[in-house]
Amino acid sequence: MAENKSSSRVTAARQKASAAKAKASAAKSKASAATKGHGGGFVEFIRTQGVVGLAVGLAIGTAAGATVKALVTGFITPIVQFIVGSQAGLESATWHVELWHRTADFAWGAAVSSLITLIATALVIYWIVNIFKFDRLDKKKDA
Image 1 (cartoon, rainbow, N blue to C red):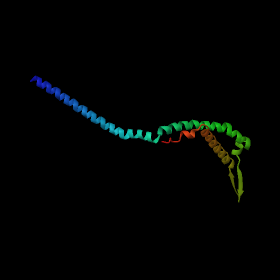
Image 2 (cartoon, rainbow, N blue to C red):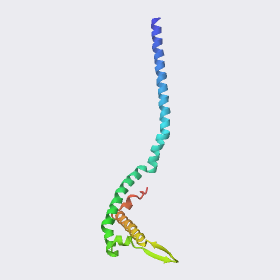
Image 3 (tube, rainbow, N blue to C red):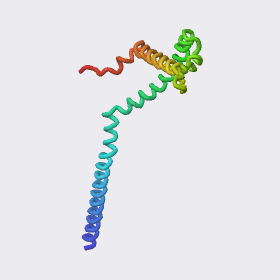
Image 4 (tube, helix red, strand yellow):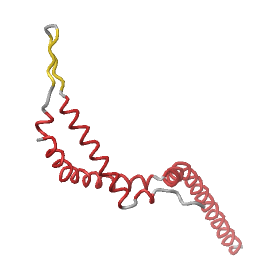
């Protein structure tokens, strides 16, 4: 009789342990499903949208921007200064208009200087992309 009580206690303990394991497993799968819905969706978004590549491109673009700026400042600006005279003189060039007792100053030099800088920067970026064949890196491979 004592043996039956002992064996029924062991059986009851095993059943409780089995029920606890089942509850833990159910809770784990429920948590996994919730995480998969949000976390898994986020990871899938990163994979499909190329966010990692975008971050790498942003980092490289920042460094390339500094390089382009140095090239424009070091090489293009002196050429422009040689042709125009001085960049400060160009930037301060204005056109003064006086009509009907009213005056207006048009800072055309600043606009021209900014346009020259824009064109020079675009030209340097174009040269870098073509010299190092970066345009071929971005093309999708044919299947």
